[in-house]
Amino acid sequence: MTAQRGDAEPADVTAPPAPAGTTAARRGNASVFWRYWTASTVSQVGDAVTTVALPLLAVGVLHASAFEVSLLPAAQYAAWIAIGLPAGVIVQRLPLRGTQVVMDLIRAAAIVSVPVAYALGVLHLAQLVVVALIVGLATVVFDVGNSTFLPAIVSKDELTVRNSLTSASTSATQLGGPSIGGVLVQFCGSALSLLLDAVSYVVSALLLWSLPRPACTTAPAKRESTLALIKEGWRFIAHHAVIRPCVAAATLVNFILGGLMALTPVFLVRTLHAPASLVGLLIATEGLGSLFGAALTTRMANRLGSARTLLYVTAAGPVFVLFLPLAQGGWGLLLFAVGNLGFGAAAVVMSILTRTHRQTVTSMELLPRVMATVRFVSWGAIPVGALTAGAMATALGNRGAMWTMFAFAFLAPLALWSSRVRKMRDLI
Image 1 (cartoon, helix red, strand yellow):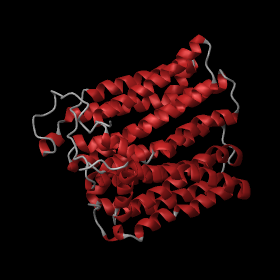
Image 2: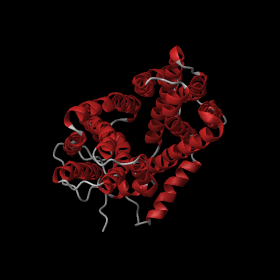
Image 3: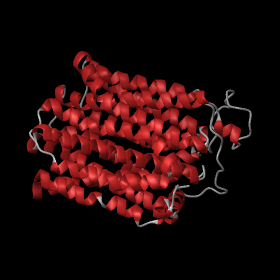
C-alpha cells in the first residue's frame, strides 16, 4: 500500500508549532534554507566529480571503447524517459523529506559499489552502466522532489532570490567540479574518487533529514490511477496561458543546448583548431555565463518585471548563438567564448524565472506532477537536439550545423513573444 505524504515519517520536533499550511509553517527560518542549500550543493559537487571519474574509470581501467563509454550518459538520460512523468506522482504519494533522503542513500550505495568491486577485482562495464541507470533513476525522483521541497520551506516572495542562489551554486559546481574531479582522479585514481560522491550523498541525506518535515499537501479524495494523475498535471500545463508558452520556449532552448553539447567539442578541435588546453576553458564559459545570469536575475526581475526580463533574455539568446558560427581560430576564439557565455546566461535567467513562476502558481498537491512533466518535455529535447546537430554536421559540416542551431534559436523567443506573456510586466 502506498503511503500518503506524512504517514511514514515520524513527527519532527524541530518543526515550528504552527498548523500545516500556514504562513509561519511554510516560511520557516533562514537556517532551514541554508541546510537545504548545503545538501544540494554538496551533492552536486560529488556529481561533478563522478562525471569525470566514471568515464575515466571505464576507459583507463576497463579499456572501454568510445561506444561503450557512451552507454554511461545514455543510461542516465534513459532514466528521464523511463520515469520522468510518473516521478511527479511518486513524489506526491510518498513523504517528501523521507523520499529525498532515501534517493540520496540509494545513490550513495550504487556509487560505493564501484570502488568495492574494483578493490575485489570484479569490476565490469555492465556494473558501471547499471550504476549510472540507478543513479539516474534516483536523481529523477530527487530533482522533482527538490523543486517541490523549496516552496515548502521558503515564502513566495523569496522564491526568485532562493532559486537564483541555488542556480548560481549549480553553475559554480558545474564550472569547478570537473576540475576537482580531474585532480582527484590524477592523484587518487578514478575508483577512489567516486567515494567523494558517495560521501556527498550521505552528507546530503543527513542534512535533509535534519530539516522540518514539509507541511502535508491535500491528498486526492479518492485513490486515482497513476495515469489519471499524470494527465491532470499535463492538462494543467497545456491549459495554462503562461506556463504553456514558457515550457515551449524552455524546450526549444534545451534543444539548442543539446545541439551545442554535441557540436562544441568537434567544432573547437576540428574546425577552429583550438589547442586542447583551451577546449575545456571555452566549454566552461557556459558555466561562467550561468553563474553571471543567476547573480543578475533577481535585480533584473525587480527592475524590469519578471515577464519583461524573460522576453528580453530569450530575444538576446539567438544573438549570442550567432557568435558561435562566426568564430575563427586564434583570437577569434574569444567570439566563441562570448557567445557561449551569453547564451548560458540567458538560459539560466529563463530557467530561474519560469521555475519560480511554476512554483508560485501551482498548488502543492499538483506541483510534483507539474515539475516532472515540464522536465520530461524540456529535458527530453536535449538528446533530440544532439542527434539533430550530429545529422546536420554530417550533411553540412560543423560550421553549417552551427548555423542551423542559430536558425533554430529564434523559435524560443517566438514562442514567448506570440503568447500572452508579451503583454505582461510580471509573470504572476
